Image 1 (spheres, rainbow, N blue to C red):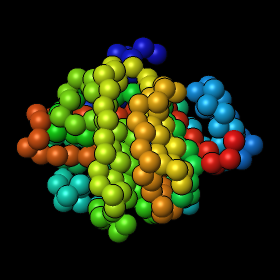
Image 2: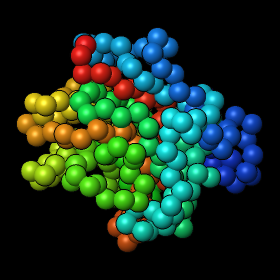
Image 3: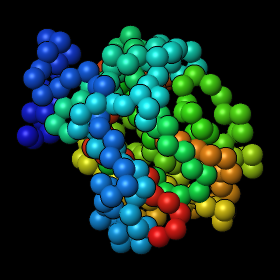
Image 4: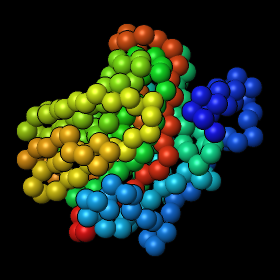
Length: 250
């Protein structure tokens, strides 16, 4: 199915509340021998993943924390009803009124690598698609107790989805980088956190590096956050094909 037709199918779901290929998210998680590394991870010598999400079937509550809470900074609301599954992908949908979605994996590790394949659609600049690492148990509506956060993809006031950003928050301060890429096509975003520092990757190519690192157990989160008053208002979509978590040892 082409990207334009897929977008129409997803939009039809929201308008008609029923499309046969999409269901309210409840994706399947694969682990151990069922996981396989991506082509980029193989080139980087990361070895086999220890945990994978393919989003084929349902979201197991033993594997995921699905947000059901006030939105980012108390704006809008994060609702499980804004997560959808279809064609082997997870969709996060943000409505114009700020009702949106987010979830966090329960799998945690301090040092390692995380990788996800995402594409975005042109949408409201007030919505920030984010893939990030957060201290154990996910982002939800709490502040990091350690001052640590790694946003290995965040889009800010960018309706056409052309400028990905990387942010590292540690007790040493905030560091960032950005790139120019058409995020309405599929891309992989990855991060490596080690005792020696943090490296960010875009399609297997390094685009961020710092000697600072997160020192706490971290979980990976996928969020579509609403920032009213910062960019144009309206709807937004975030589509996630898969997620991989790799141990530090290759």
